[in-house]
Length: 133
Image (cartoon, rainbow, N blue to C red; front, side):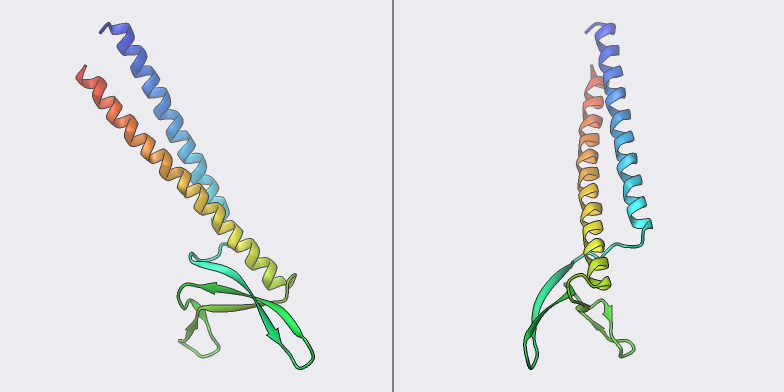
């Protein structure tokens, strides 16, 4: 293979590697910015709507539910899977919706980073191939 073609392929590989690294860094920075807001729901949490029946009527209420007991209760040292949010539009409800949405954004960005890291591994194996030529 001629030196010009090899050099061109190596330049292309270097450019793609730089672009991958730059994109990963940009996505990692986005995650840091989202985490810095402090408004991120714990993993495994989602919002649940439930019907509470009173003496005269029924009301829809909302709670943040987790896969394991992570929310502190009034009893010291005890935890529960549920955090009461109240009615739709309440401050707690709105904050929980934003926190769950922020967590979903972070998870999406992390999936993108994982994909880019896989691509990076592919580039490394491609670079090894050129070293052998």
